[in-house]
Length: 489
Ligand SMILES: Cc1ncc(COP(=O)(O)O)c(C=O)c1O
Image 1 (spheres, rainbow, N blue to C red):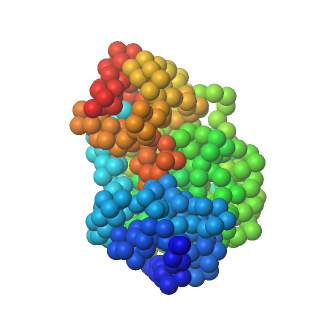
Image 2: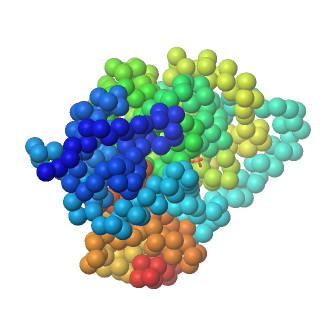
Image 3: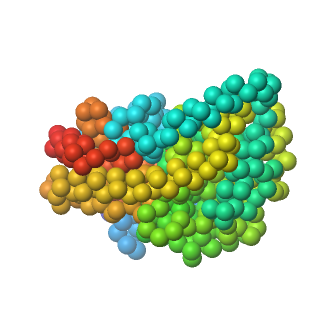
């Protein structure tokens, strides 16, 4: 006979940065470790626990799925869900230790370690544009011209919303090449995507707001949002991009959805038209904001670049974010956000009160770079170069790994994902492989680190590697061999 756990009380803390479903997991593990829940005990039914915690059924379901994957509980159909009868003593001891450690170490620390590839230009760094191909002479000339101009604007405080001529150039460029119709007043110049996110949150977010986040998704943004106090709801990504139905089932009332529709980060899929329409429809009904991160859509190797999600946004719910980090270089620290008309005044007020703003000199040089046609030329050249380099790296990895990996050639962007096939002993520890690769001087990231859910048996394992700086076939082969050595341990 199994004991029912009617008396078990699960408490969650909505002020904690950790999402509710993870808190539920932790509470169960702690209860098992402490002996409050014993092998064979029945755990509360999904609906009952959801009601008790005043949360969505999907949230509890997600927690239970993780507990099942990790072997803590078993689902026995209509009979209910039970603590695994075969829970070894070592599991309960290590669960106790782990839950103590986790209480001490916030989740974000795990992410930080997994993503710590430093700032320098080490080989295979995801997202780093080809530094050898940037037209430095032209750039130096434009910066020097502005520096010498004697313009007093260069010496005073910059406009906190951005240098007007650059805002104009960005608005024109987005209209022509991304289908984003906007006026310069809607464009705010920022200092990188995370500073864009900060501006968005400060302008529009309320304490305890929840936001859909792609699972897997851009880990640096995720880390920032968690620290900023946004309660993230991981929404799975499949071949069509973000699973909007799953998002609605998990949390229909989330205030934000953070998405990378053109080129999902990291998996590289494109959000299908049907999903785009569904996502926009959800945002209109819920009165929520969609944050579109269009970080590297300029580089597309199959067909023409797709218009941005923002181009379909009839109800003005999409906040469009772009960056010069990929199309020029990240040391510039210049990016931008196109703000829905109804939010322009709030953004303008906030940039003023933050005394935000970016150095005039570089904003002016970028405006000149665009106006004089260098930008369009550079993009065209980089598209051809990256298409070649992505093949070099992909071929070299396939040659070095054989059927140990599968690579779906990315249709765009500057990184590829090599997914490890299951090993003889089960799933591959991609975090350990990435750590060894980093010791060998490569700046690669483990794919499983991009999941908020931690590592379950559904988490893909692999390596995320940038190809934009792979100079030739010999270099590609050398890097692939280093990766293989890291894989072999
Ligand atoms: C998914 C994603 N979004 C945005 C960015 C741009 O970040 P930033 O503008 O801070 O350089 C990157 C850079 O790697 C990225 O990978």
